[in-house]
Image 1 (cartoon, rainbow, N blue to C red):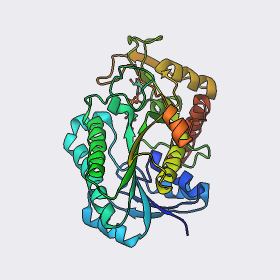
Image 2: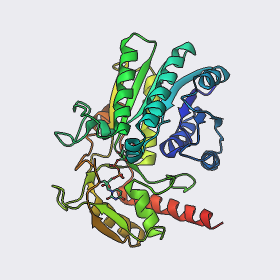
Image 3: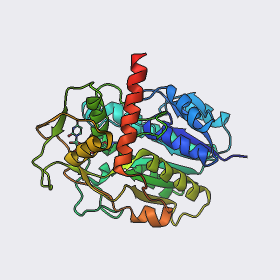
Image 4: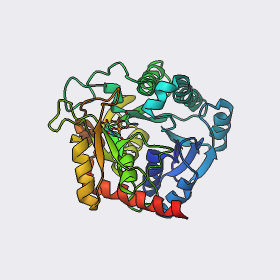
Length: 344
Ligand code: WQD
């Protein structure tokens, strides 16, 4: 009997790649998603890769009654991976209530219903945003969290604290929190990938859309930072590598081998890459030009942040393996496939 994993937000970018790796690892996956920032087509993409179509419920995590029914329908869930959340930093500044309701209420409903339905384990999708501008680099899990610079980042911090407090209350619960750095790229099959709705705010989808001609040029948000080439530095991690980190984290919880009922892991490559370096790597890897112009800094941008992934490397036995170059090739292949489907 396959162990059942509930993946909220499982038709989304990181969710869909994680569903693929969970299925390949032998788990049965149930997806709930409200399709507010993804499409049902992800299910077909997942099935094309693994041959297994996951169970799917069109459900919003803020719908307590609907969630309760879902937990009753799918008995024996061994763990929840909670991706479902709004994640656009800029939008969160414009619509804070939407972000607090969706991201915080959604998690609280899950946490409330888990013990009622005998579900003990939750893996939470967090972000390096909680560290703000770190005092030391590379940043490890002991680094202090900093006041959030956006409602989006604040919801991640609040959700981490809610999980901490629920576990501290003595609830029948274990949790692992993964703090992602910058996920990029797509599955090598080009069957699933990042599907930004509207104009992308993240760098790599804007690069690929510029390269394919959707935009005339890329705006580089500032080259006057205190970095070698003046542009911001990030830890760009391949989305498939990131998805595999979720599989080993779930196994750690199910095997009951956690050192603590709540553990944190930074999931990054440990390598900082600047905006200019990424543009250049994309052009060299894909033999395509990316016209760009340098404009004003973007408010709220962190100057430089990259991970110290040693804890994940040693305790989870997980390490990022796919190069930035190969990741950028996968991003380009995905964009070209999207372009073909747009033509249809
Ligand atoms: C990266 C760099 C920009 C777009 C955010 C969230 C984080 C995570 C990933 C969800 C920055 C520069 C970008 C553009 C540019 N989200 N840039 N021109 O802001 O590091 O992280 O997305 O989990 O939580 O905070 O990612 O890709 O937006 O920006 O110059 O058109 O690229 O200034 O230096 P960010 P990003």
